Image: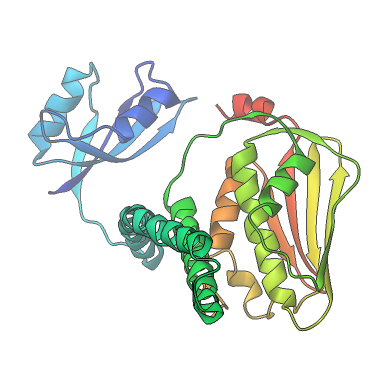
Length: 308
């Protein structure tokens, strides 16, 4: 359908009303909001609309008690970034649906192997259990890839409550098999923080897994986690002694689908960045030694109220 731009006053509408309008389905006049721009100080509102014709837009706004000052038909030229974003949205939806469909059969395979390993422990050739181990590791890896896709594709509201950072770190480590050659140093002094604990576990799971893979299993290595309290925020550093991130890759590591791993999805670090930014925080990376730094506000509820 054609695209139109219109302009009118806000007539008392607030940002929550505008957000609801943008995300509303097509109305009775066939009008859909694509974008909404407003200036609250000047009581001005501009809408980018998908509609069958100009008349439908006049009727749409009349039904809302708004009077348009102008309606004009426009043509759109999309930027490369916009095209890429559209593709990512479609890819995210497809990947999310596919990942959900894969989860059940993967669970069945793993459960079947676990049952056979226990039931036939003393009856089968030991060589078979080597293959069982390979199946289990493959299923675990596939579940990790599926989790990367799901964490990137879905954006859920934060469940903010008081959490222990040490408990979050330990929770993330429960799902990680740490090789014997790697030592993880965790702060002794805890910090309480208002955040979504389960989402931050996903962040630390990804950062620690990446650190372990960076070190590898051939040489001894160390992962150092540091907490630093500042005036209005908490800084968390995850530093490892593994190989540095290639200089040419550093600017791209938070871009969706970019990966330096042979079997990576390129969604792990972008998911971490999304989660931290949902908390109104910042995720940074630097080399020599490789360190990921998380900056989180001490009072996320205060920041959220200011933003709203």
